[in-house]
Length: 336
Ligand SMILES: Nc1ncnc2c1ncn2[C@@H]1O[C@H](COP(=O)(O)OP(=O)(O)OP(=O)(O)O)[C@@H](O)[C@H]1O
Image 1 (cartoon, rainbow, N blue to C red):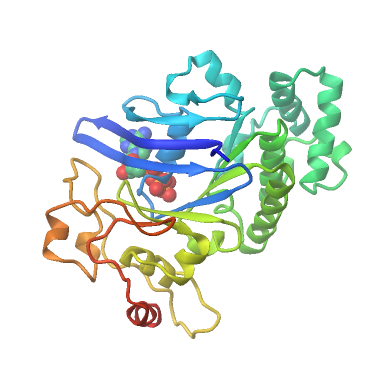
Image 2: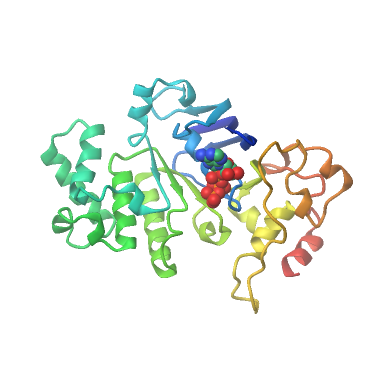
């Protein structure tokens, strides 16, 4: 089976007065129908710019410098980057939907939830407003909003944060998109609500058989959701593997560090381990390993050359000159 979405050698840069911010460099990955892919990394690693590029939401001074984004959901291969604005607006929200971190910015405060749901449905589906309203009620029911018939008349401010995020999910899924992109969808919510929303997203993703691209800075959040995980650092992909391999057989020293930053129940921790050092400034970055300045396993050449993303085991890629391949060493690093 072919992937529903293939990102190939994507480069997205911002042309600032101070220099060029190379936010995304040479990013490539596939997303299959019904698959959940997590993109994980610290702030500034290029996660949001990657998915905004897929949605063609990069504006000046930003530019998609090169690459291809192949979408196969409409019975043919289309390069999203080559589509006209008109064609793109048929894909955005219908074929590929996106949920942002802050539900307030994605909802219009002046319109009821019902109006916003029906607006999306009418825009993309061949139905009248009455039918769209009925579909809207069904969608609110699916995201487990109680008394959906009544809630259609509510304004966003009348909903709690968790309810707003449920409404956003309802809007995003109302046209049955083949790809759903979620950028830190639960970060603004408290922990219990976060867990409920994640559970809901997981159920709906299975029911709708949507390919889900899920962005987070917290590996723990996608532990139970992702089939595959992409670890990003300093605009580049550092490791790509099945979620199982990322958690149990991580090769990249940076992935090890991210894992140590997840709270653990089996280990007494006074405080969570912070990753030492600062994320790199992305202006005029040289072509060397971006993680080298913070890496405990750094070799001389790491600050001189950029390692290739290499497939070390089938489906398990790593960009590192000194990966943690030895099992004992790996265990020791985990328990440090
Ligand atoms: N509109 C913009 N103008 C200039 N630089 C930008 C712009 N948007 C993003 N960048 C830069 O691109 C780089 C990658 O940003 P991006 O938002 O993709 O990071 P991220 O991994 O999603 O982090 P976060 O979790 O904070 O959203 C950063 O260095 C950021 O400063």
